[in-house]
Image (tube, rainbow, N blue to C red):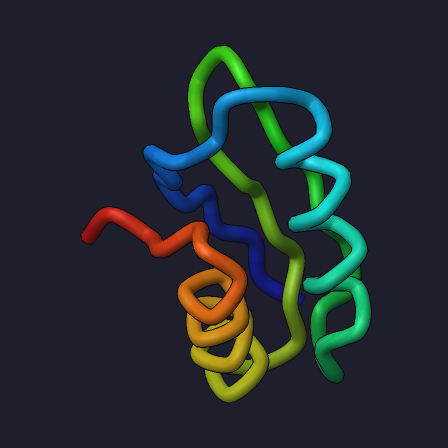
Length: 68
């Protein structure tokens, strides 16, 4: 399992974090999701690159695109 922290500029409140956690926990291969409103980041633990790629797609689909 690997861990990555993604910068997500559209995070503005705890509700954003809750939405992101709910959506990403449904992605196969995503093991853990933590977020920070202050840092505007999401930290993921994931099984493989496919899961990470899908998580990034989901974030964009729900209005929280990752800043590369």
